[in-house]
Every structure is written in C-alpha cells, then in structure tokens.
Length: 217
Image (cartoon, rainbow, N blue to C red):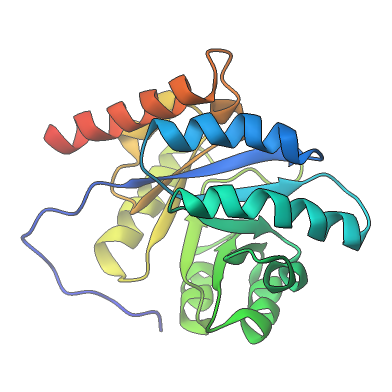
C-alpha cells in the first residue's frame, strides 16, 4: 500500500505552484510564456506539453526550453514522452494512467521524476504511489476535456493529503478554485490560467497571492 502518514498537529506548508503549458511548438513562444511566469512567483515545476512533431524536433524543443526553466529553480516535466525526458535534459515526465506510469518508472527512476495523472479511482492513486510515482495528480481534464465534479476533486485531494506522505498535485482549472485546493502540496495552474489575457506574470502573481492569503487565513 502507499505510505500513510501519522496524524499531525503542525500546520502543513503552503502549497507551491505547478504550471501546465498549452501545447507548444515554438521555443520562443515557451520563453515568452514561461519567462514572465517564473519571474512572478515561486514555481516548483512546469509541465511542458508539446505540439506533435517528429522525435528529433521534440528533443530540440525540450533542450531549448529546459535551461531557462531550470535556472529559475523549477523542475521541467514532459507531458508523456517519457523516453525523451532524459535524452533532452528534462527533470522527468508526467504520465497518464497506471500502465504508462509503471513503464516510465522502469526507465526514469531514480534519476528523474515520474508523476502520475489520469487516476480514475482511489485504488489507482494508491497503486501509482506504491509503484514508486513521485506524486499523484487529481482533477486534470481527460483527453475529451472532461473532469470530475469539483467537489469530488476537492474531497480526493483532502483525503490524500491527510492520509499519505507522497505529494499530491491538485489541478485548478481557474483561479477561483485555488482556495479550495490548498490541502495539496502543489497547485497545478491550467493552461487557461497561465495564458491569462492579463499576461502570465499577472496570472501567476495572482495565484501566488491567493495561496498566501489562504495560508494566513
């Protein structure tokens, strides 16, 4: 079973931000998006989604995008493409579904991060953690854009954070959801948040301010 943690009377640390990009095809577009976002607040990780291309092109994109992200102290994770993460200098990969997670664990651990998403049940989340995933994510949309009810997402995040030591990432589809997900160790900001019309810096600063306000509440 996944490692459970004993009850604690100490306050949990403030959740950290985890940025999810739209599907990117141009390293310059990534720089324009991520540069201001990473400068605006403390960001733990960036989940890089890549537009379809041949393998060499994908590797070259990652190699251009990774250094400035890592220079800011954020981990760069690749959405899928576990086989490219090490070759391109990324810090790890985020996989959808138990089978993909377990396959990636064999090739990426222990040097790199393996994140688990697309977890349809509590059992799937526990299985991913037991297998060696570094975190589990709750609330991200499926390929059709559907996600569980927000109440179900919040309930699962709070259950996991209370019971297990392995971190969870709570996916916020809007800034308004952040305050309800602060039990998680990390809050994933959806691409629509990062691509806010006000600009990525304003959006990330807004998200960080909401986290800070919740930690003081």
